[in-house]
Image 1 (tube, rainbow, N blue to C red):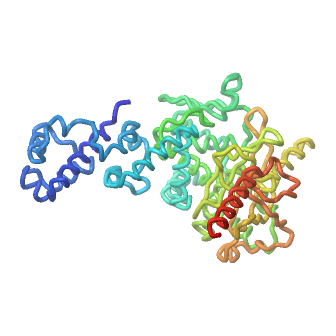
Image 2: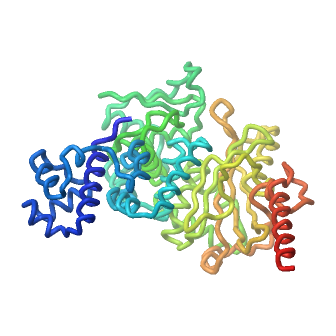
Image 3: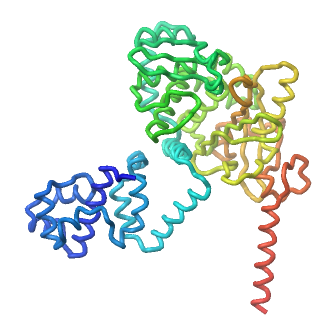
Length: 495
């Protein structure tokens, strides 16, 4: 694979820096020898500038190295651990600047690290290969980290939503309608909206929508979408256009992921759509009413869904935006589970603010605890479907984790999904029960809320009398055997 121009600059800068330091030269000293300014030399070493041929000749003479060796992409033994990273163009793909990291600084750290750090990098690369870590998984994990860094609240997008509302929906009554969004897309952005555009595309049956870009873009939608899903699809498309987001994916759900910027822009458009459907000022007042009730009142959440004509997932996402920012409840997680039967439950989306909370995804093929509210509500949903009831279910639970002091208040919502579009899904928010949370959530100790002892997975769980167990606790048993073996070795050693 060819190395990107950006990484060519980084390699050149690293080699110049390494040679300068080996000769014990300061920037000022090298500047005096070459006639190049210290600031320009600094830019070269950071990988921001690549000098012209005559300046490279001057540098090679001052550093006592041949021109060919200086411009060669061949790395020295000391820089060898960086080779595979640079060959993969990792620093081009990863948006390090979003996390406050300059690629040159990271490479500088690695280039001065001991050999063990180089071995560590190689180990990470090998692990990613062995576990089949795909690029899109890496991007989605990075997105979660980016959200968590900002407590999942982005004031700039909130301002853009307010500006959009003032410009296009100032006189509109709330909640907004499909027709209002459609009119804006047609008038302002020359869209052609085809609500049944995917009706006869058998291969695209799992998709919710597809956008065909052109001077007059076409938005093809799955005719099985609910009204709320249709509005969200149009609102998200408005987000792409109003925020001028590019590059972007053109299908929902994902078919392929081409770059982190594409993943980030998809998230920004979704954030825009949620904030547009659930205005901050209004929804905050509704959440205050919900949180200050002395008893858990599921009807308030169901009324919010009805008032704003939104999906359970939109409401839960909006809560993850506003609970940390407005209410100071920052220790929380968001989960989305999906299932097509009563045995297989997949964690398809997760986010953890202020630390990695339980539960969280596992790379191993294990069975998530069947006592979680997120999974129990899906089982109840299947029973509900047999009664032709398509209403939203709400479940609350206090989860206490085995061998842990952590306890969470879990609120789960689930609604039957159209089988032509996707699997049934539940969305949940878990709030760590802490002094701050207790002050804000008045119903946290409502005696009606069931308390359950839970664990991460069946395979790691010591609760042998669990009636919900879906798999033997072989990982836990192996760990216990290993502990017993270590204890026996320790006793014999001391004797």
